[in-house]
Image (cartoon, rainbow, N blue to C red; front, side, top):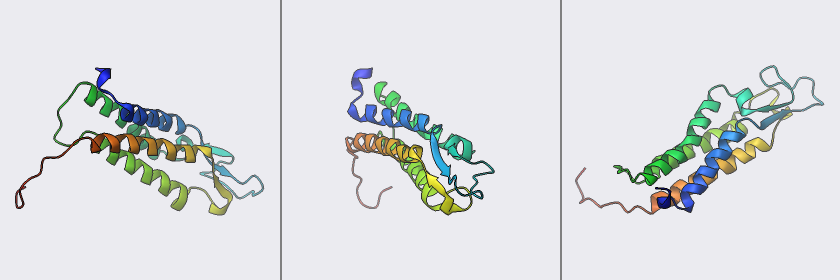
Length: 151
């Protein structure tokens, strides 16, 4: 069964494990010189798990996607879509959520006193590995073309 898995799936699974672990590492830090810098009433280095009550579950669910893809490939399950497409979509959504929460909707006040820590950057790397693994797998599947005008 595992012989059907290629480097792409292992890269995606590595990204999934990385993302799952990184949810618990520091993503944000408050400025120690600014007494008014808080994230949800807390100061210091805070993880995604500490700050985002909904996003943490979405990212953990996204981290499982490469393992589901590996199971589908290992068991040779037939799908109505190219293998890897749903994992790619899930990973791209996770990438967008991480990017939004770090750049646009950064938690805490004042936003100028909240910095991004290494966990946020590693989360982007993990999700990019998941995207790359899924995209490479889905590109191996050729779709049958339909004549124009048919659904």
